[in-house]
Length: 95
Image 1 (cartoon, helix red, strand yellow):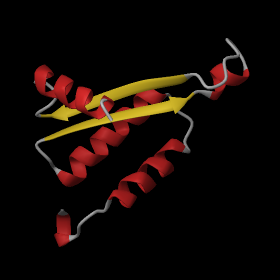
Image 2 (cartoon, helix red, strand yellow; image 1 turned 90 degrees about the horizontal axis):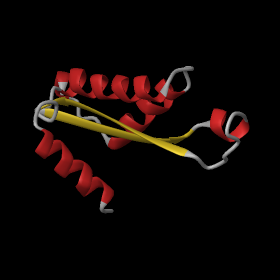
Image 3 (cartoon, one colour; image 1 turned 45 degrees about the vertical axis):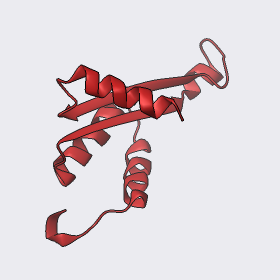
């Protein structure tokens, strides 16, 4: 971490909360979060997965409350290493 500071998980949650308040598509939000983590922490790789309920689908259009969409973004070592990315995503989904 820059300046010797250590970011806790609450910092990530807060950054996501701030970014999510701007009107945008979920795919862009997922990419923005992955880019922010990658640029600030400079890890070997980043995988971000977001699951969100889309109010546009719940309130109008298909009118299906509770409909959730899952998006993911990969950076660094996971970007071009599909078996590593797929394994990590499978591990995340096994919980």
